[in-house]
Image 1 (tube, helix red, strand yellow):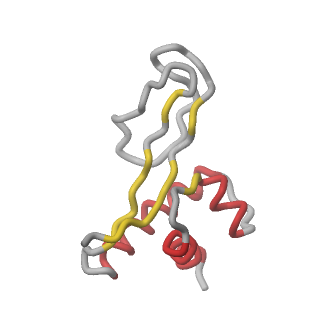
Image 2 (cartoon, rainbow, N blue to C red):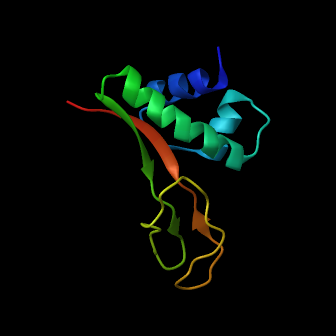
Image 3 (cartoon, helix red, strand yellow):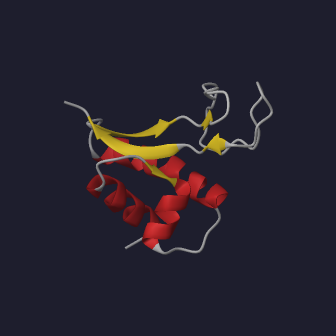
Length: 102
């Protein structure tokens, strides 16, 4: 099974959001978070296409643990290194889940 198929299978089985680090750890793969984010972009398209639009990959946005700032302007998944509001590096990373439309 390809890595992307393994990611899809894991996210379909899980009932909560998973961070890139958690996905990497659970699947036991040796790649950097940035590389996983690239795979997740393709996974999102695959899920949408194969489900006929009934499923989609959703991202819980990263937020600052110090001041609560939410990074709402993200167009692609990535882990910000520093909060633009308070300068803190305590950033909660983005997390992902597959949501089935009703």
